[in-house]
Image (spheres, rainbow, N blue to C red):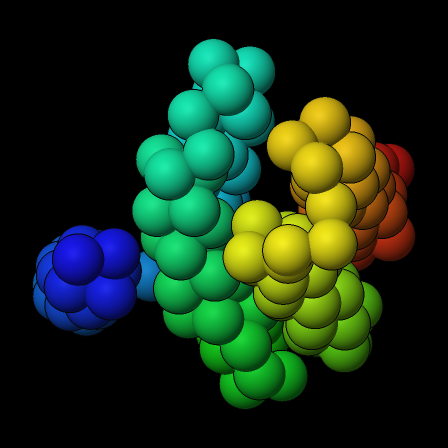
Length: 141
């Protein structure tokens, strides 16, 4: 059942992503929305919806931060040399998502331990977002 839901989400998100314009502002809004959905699910203690939202976040991270070329296309001309920062942040975010999924399915952790470990990974995702923004944005303009 969960696999069918995840496949549906993946297909839907892929279609929506393919049809939408790829701009830096649009991409960052989609990433923000995905991340806020994950946070909201955890705040509501809704682990199943957190997993669905993480799937959406993974898709959006891959779509916007998956390769140097994808990031380069989004960045303004004077910041294109910073694409590796975005790609690296995307890779680390995807690693945290995988860690959260492993925590979700772990039989070794009780629910409280799992929540705390997953929340630590959420903080790591947020740190990567801020780190990338701080290093890539041109704050002097």
